[in-house]
Image (cartoon, rainbow, N blue to C red; front, top):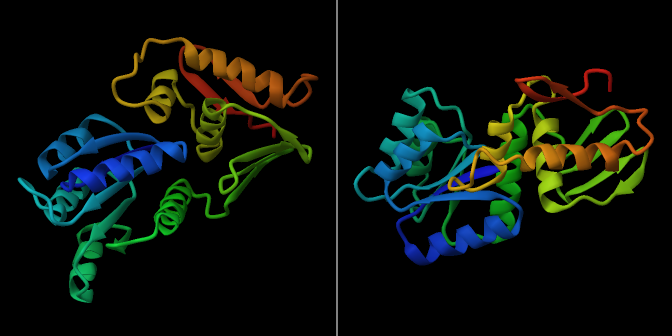
Length: 224
């Protein structure tokens, strides 16, 4: 999943970057609202974590503009402000949830995962499709109740496809969601991951879990 973190405190920005990357997210960073607005308009995000007190363009104004642009990425706001009125203002601006600083990393991660699942229409932490079960909490995959060992990027590809079960996902879109913004989008690495996923999930060739739509992309099989 691809996350945008917007925070003007350099130390906290670095900490959040490390936290999210250590937990398997692809991360883009911005230290003011104007930079963040540019990134929102350029890249698709599965989640944005936004501090309210930002320079150049305030966090609340950033959120209002993002929603005005009809960008629907879920937004988690961070605030050092304890007044409930300001939290309400953030939610009314278009945010989906909030955390008050200081916060526990475990709570931030739990809220991030919940927002991403809800946005994808998958409120349950375990996503099941036919014989495939993917646990977003433990980041484990099972096929016919048998554990399947995947690399971090194989897991990311499968997770994104399962989060969008009825959507044809292009190679470019997959790349944008699992890698940072400076990755070479012309790389054929996605094809390699898809091939390896098919072999690991379906070694006998009887499930056929991933469809290839020539010139368009990939989709979780509708037969599952």
